Structure formats: C-alpha cells, structure tokens
Length: 244
Image (cartoon, rainbow, N blue to C red; front, side, top):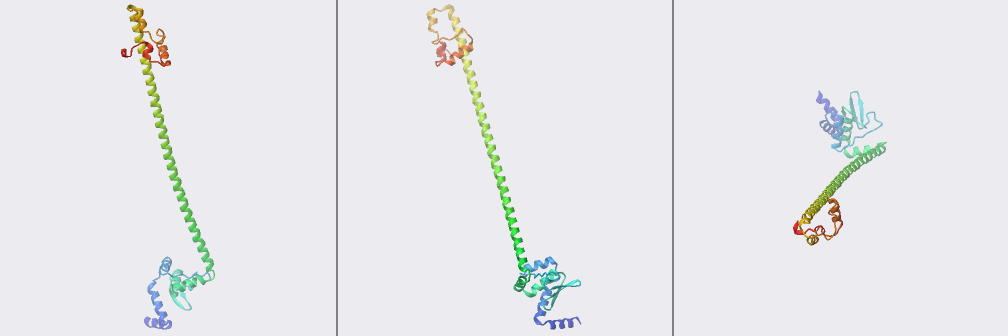
C-alpha cells in the first residue's frame, strides 16, 4: 500500500531526516519562484547559488518536469529552481546556508559586484536628492527675485505718482499766483484810471508803488517783474493788503 511504501521510505531516511522532510513538505506547497525568494528572505535563509550547477543553485537538479533537491541524499522536489534552493536552504538552516553561500567559488566576486551595485544605487539616489534640492533652491530664489522686482517696480511706480502729483500741485500753485497777480494788476489799472479823472496829483502819488512797474505794458510783464523781486507784490503794486 501507499502507507507501507511511505513507512519504508521513512525508515530509509531515519527519524530526524524523515521529520525534517515532513516539515518541509507541509511548509512548502510548490510556491512560485518569486514566493520562494520572499519566503527565504522572511525566514532569514540564504539561497546558495552555484555557477557550476545547471539550475544555478547548489543541490538543485533538473529532473524532467520537476527539480530534485539533494544534499548527499535526496531531500525533496520543487516546481522551480528557486523553490528547490529554498528547500535546500531550509535543510541547512539560516547560518549554514549563509556560510555555504559565502564559501562557494566566485562568491567574493559576486559579493563585490553586489556591493558595487549597492554603492552605485546609493550614489544615484544621493545625486537625485541633491539635484532635487538644487532645483527647489533655484525655484525659491527665482520666486524671491521676482518678488523683489515686483516690490521695486511698485516702489518706483509710487515714487513716479508722487512726483507727478507734486509737479501738478506746483503747476496749479504757479497758475494760481499768476492769476492773482493778473487780477491785482487789473484792479490797480482800473483804480488808477478812475483816480486820474478826479483826484489830485498828491493823492495819486501816495498810491504809487514803491517799485516802478510797467503797469501800462502787458500783464505778463508785470507778473514777471513782481516774481523777480523780493518785495510783497501788493506793496509793489501800491495796493493795500486789506483792499484785496
């Protein structure tokens, strides 16, 4: 019977080996290659690779459609080379599988290559971080420069508005003064014309301006003469301040 055959097989393996194989059989139900690699990592096992083996793993041989696993004797079968390597590593245990993988010919070269690849990946990652940092700093600087330019443009615009407002105020003040002088001269001329008919020369002389002005000329000349002097325009025109 099948049970009798299993008993004969177990007696051939012995108590310990048959127990180990039974445990291995319950733990591994033909997992995929990716699952075998993941299980090895989770269990702290090292898959013992070998360039001398056709399957790429020590103790794993291709037997028609399956992979047979040996370690001086047959210890199981697998659906893939990785699964067979997992069975082999479980048979050895974490420490022994790591030690055997390290002592295989060419292991130092593979280790060196892995370290070089790891270092290259670390350098690439660090370079990527540095580049991202530089790009971030450049973006922040460009934003600060743009803000400063906008502030400077706003300041200049405000100064220009103040300058234009001051110029406009100055022009309005100048026009107001000219208008006031023109009106004053016109009143003076009208007063002189009225006084010349019925007042005495003495009365007329008393209202003569302290500074001779061309009151009989164009009004703009009178304004220019008043603006050029340092005296009160009303006094220069002979007009009492209260008369305005």
